[in-house]
Image 1: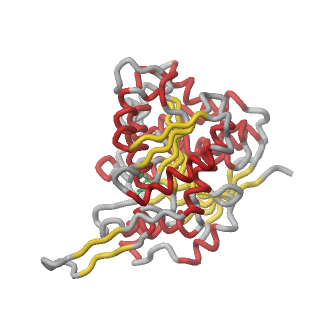
Image 2 (image 1 turned 120 degrees about the vertical axis):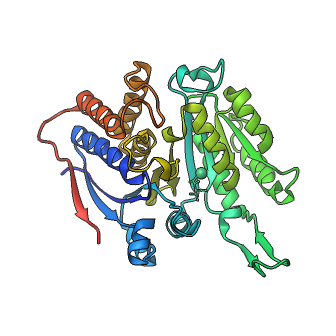
Length: 370
Ligand code: IPM
Ligand code: MG
């Protein structure tokens, strides 16, 4: 019997549905080639759905997700809806409630011509950011008092628990151990100005002592931003707080070829996890068939890797790399000269050609989840 994965799909807002369509196209080509099945359960949570029905993602949906093998998300956010409402109701809620405590974000340069940096080659940009994904300023501790008055008070606490920090740091060291590269973990924090972040330094040194074969480094986030541009080759595995990880990985995405190019996994090892491109909903280019689906396709590769389909994941990555180096894919970001759909077709066809084993292998079947 062939392996079957049940994947929840939240296409979301803006360019989300466009890029998700292409990601699923590549998933379908890959599943045919590797002989596994995917059953898609589609969820409507988006700003449009909220505007049409007044419905936000219900808590019952979270329970349903626990029975899936993975979640695949497009993008969220729409200027017509209260700022952050949908992002908090869907994305941050899922991260927190399913305790997806790692946000894994690879930054890899596939071709020198893709980066806006000077004198940087692919050998210099091959890192992976391990962003803590449930705590920090994202924990939701705080609020606004006396809103709109001259005495208004706005508080957002940066929350770090020993448990939360340690499991993230440990994940980073395990990841470094599994990588063929430099085997170095760099902690990024701001413990000189933010005393509470001393917990990261202490936990980092304690965990590091268990991994004597792995080099360590600890730098402040302002310096990290500088080095990402001036000396990206110093980074291998980077471990950092939720907020700093958010900021640095947009910079990382641009360094590797554009914000449309990067993927991320919201991971809880051994449990249902969620995969998404790191870009936002980009309402300015939504519906124009010009957004890059590369980040969304790379997110499919990360999802397959998490599901144990590593060969399929590697094939997607290798295909993107090959299309870039042969310049058949001229750029990884929007306005590459190819439409969203053309990029999806190109990657899906290449994957299919490279790996097609039998014409009658099972493909993706759709199931309406609602
Ligand atoms: C990301 C996004 C989210 C975040 C937003 C949409 C809340 O920027 O996944 O990086 O800040 O985590
Ligand atoms: Mg972000």
